[in-house]
Length: 487
Image 1: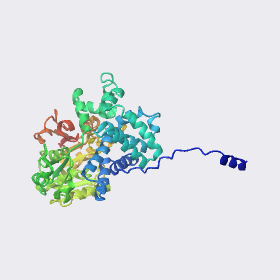
Image 2: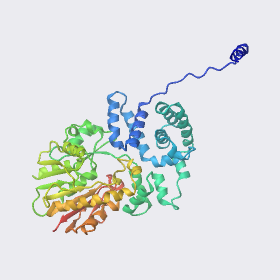
Image 3: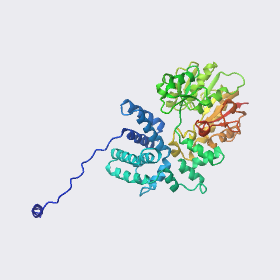
């Protein structure tokens, strides 16, 4: 049989075949490959982009692969894709033939990067699609690159407004869902922020939009070690501006590199949001009755507020004890305080199990762990990672830390309860529960009005506590309550 088939095949005329296309190696785009690696780290390791991206960029610059424009594009691709991830997921879901959960995560990351280029940047459509397909060929292979090509061509059929008109419910029918899709926030966060902010549609839309803007890089000049004027002079040609509210703040222009400044490299200045500076300054300037020699930062990691407090304390002859539960974060605190001219100490200790005697301090800051809903500009992935039940997880810890802070301060001293969240369950509800004895003994305190301690800052509400907002103050949404121990 084989002989006959062989003979037959030889005796027949051979069909003519067109020569196949030669295999083309995919073009490696270092900018998009880096952006993809950053998204994979966020997805696989629950990493934060603001921690993952800088070392990747630094390595690329040192290797000669990147210039400033490349770094800016990579940063935009990573942060933009993460900020609007939920909205892009809803759009991509309309363009695939299977539930989104059945799409492999690396494929979905490439699709998200492509969707952001198509819908959130000025990159031309053909360039956004072709660059994404080339990325898919490099990191996924040719087979899945065809899938990416097909999906992104469907995504490109509409601009972002066109897609939102298709997928978002009418505002009058479901305002939270409408705002969530239009401004890329989970519905529960929209609802929580709206409750905390109050007011009508305009205010919540301004807040959600501010969450989607890239925050300025703000520096702090540590008192006694550097001045805002020094930082302005050093960064002047790069377009630096004074802070809006803090006398120690300097705002860098977009693309400004803090590490290029001598004061930052030497630890005399640092990167710190102006809201955090205002919280530390308000506590430091709150009136106390009696001596003012011993200060405590009970949740000091990673050390920004502790470094500012230590410098302020040193100017007054006071000493700061900085306590942090996690050893690696305690090391960051020690690094931030290194070189402070006045007395200080850094310890690794749990604030709920104090390593100090009650009534030992004149001023105490307790910046408690929280959901971080006030820093969504800096950590955009947190909005998709957090869940409503996380509030219940933090609640007992927040209350116990505040109880221990009030126990640590002497009568006449002041405690600052701070958190980077505007959620009512993490702010005033915690303070009121503790001072009224819900879940523990009642505490004899009086509120200190924090508003006069932030001079010049507008829209601070009815007091006595303070809530800062990104859209009103240009800061993270920091909360501060000041309490004086009376008995």
